[in-house]
Length: 203
Image 1 (cartoon, rainbow, N blue to C red):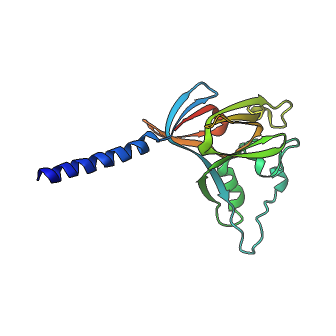
Image 2 (image 1 turned 180 degrees about the horizontal axis):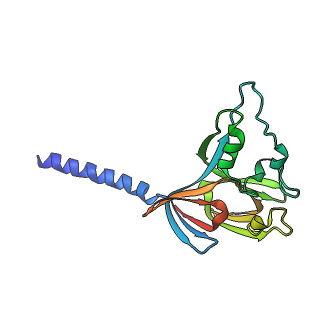
Image 3 (image 1 turned 180 degrees about the vertical axis):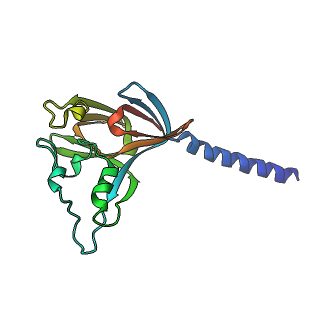
C-alpha cells in the first residue's frame, strides 16, 4: 500500500512539474492607449473583423446607385489600405446594400502576422515574435475629410522590438478593422489598434 502511495505521489509530482512551464508561458500584454489608460490583458490576440457582401441572384456584384459617394477622397490610399483612414459604419453598409439582396455576413479572424510598411516595402512580422510595439501618429495636414472628423485623421507609424532583440520599423501602418482583444479581471475587452500607443507582451 505504501509503495503504491509513493508511486502515485511521484506521478502527481511529475504532472504538476510538467504543467508548471505551460502555466509560466501564458502570454499577457500591457497596453497603454493615447488617452492615458492602461490595461493588462491575458490571452491577447489581434483580431481582424470583416464583412462579406453576398452576390445578387444574377451573379453580379451589387452596385449602389450612388457609387460615387463611396469613392475615397483625393489623397487617401485606395484598396485594402483604406480601412482606417475613414471610419465608416457597418450599419450604414447594411442599409446601403440591404436593398440589393441578402444582408452582409460579418466575421472575424485572428491575425498571426502584422504588416509594417517602410519606404513602400511591406514587412510581415509574426505576432509571436514581438516583445514591444510602439505606435506614432501625426495629424494629416490638409485632411480631405469633413471638418467634424478631420481632427481625428492621423497617419500612423510603428516600431516593433522583437524577442531576439531585433527591431522592425514601419513608416506607415494601417490594419483596417483590427483590434487587440484580451481578458481583464472585469471581462473581455477589445481595443482598436488606432487607440494604442504602446503594447508590451510578456511571455
